[in-house]
Length: 116
Length: 222
Image (cartoon, rainbow over all chains, first blue to last red; front, side, top):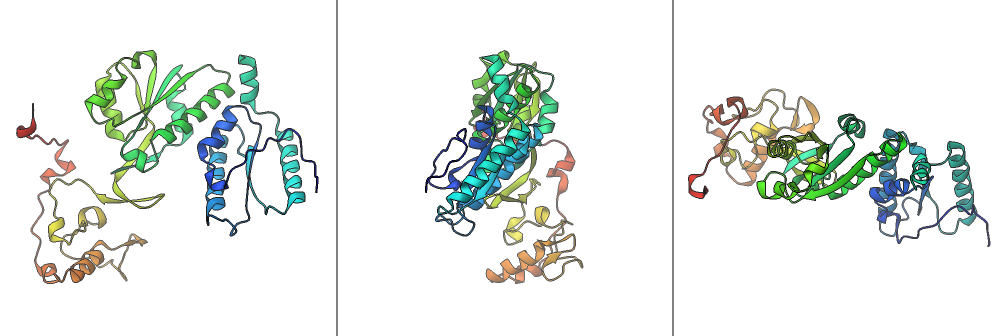
């Protein structure tokens, strides 16, 4: 199955979404990311028991922080997919990309470009 | 440990809005354990503040450092040679650290980065609860190691009040009655007869109500 997902999406592989820390999410926006999708296994299917549940809580905290600095908490989202759901992966990633496009670029990225 | 919780970012932004060079100072002790003001929380706050100011089009220098402690001279002295580069310091230590920093660097505005809550324990990760109010005259020997000063809403010393129901306090059904805990503990220790002994009136002069307190030990003073 060779499916196409938006080419502007960069994938960072991790052994488990439980490895994703709040600082990783916040820093990615400071470095100019327009949006971040954390894609973990289905709830209840984590090989490390709670990795994806923990990741979701961290994503929610990152959303609160982004909202509090008026960057838009919706720029970071958590999705739970099984590894066999490639079409669904493409669907959620494409929808997220569209959503971020509607929100516009990360203003930090614009500020960084101006400063450079 | 001293338990603190993170301040809302909006409140910290309000504190530092007027400044251009900000130093965020974390503390490696209690506030690191309760995940309110350690190195990681400093990094997250610094990142959020940088983005806030960038978003506003304001150029602000934000640096981070985490000291071993902020309640001892020698660690606060580590800032001596660099603190003048900044307009304001945000200390993510407990209220003790914030005040000691302010005392040491008289000309530097020092803002609190956390809300200091109480002396307590980690029940589980993410849950901290109060155990001690530092009343200055510990009576844990008489109460099976469970403190009625910090854990009983009425600070009763001779058994529970009438509000204790099924082992829980009347102020909140999720709060366990301290005296239920004390009696259960005394049963376990086979010392229930101690419960019958009347606890004399406590000397409250050593508590906070007597004004700011100080401990002096001549034998270790230099």
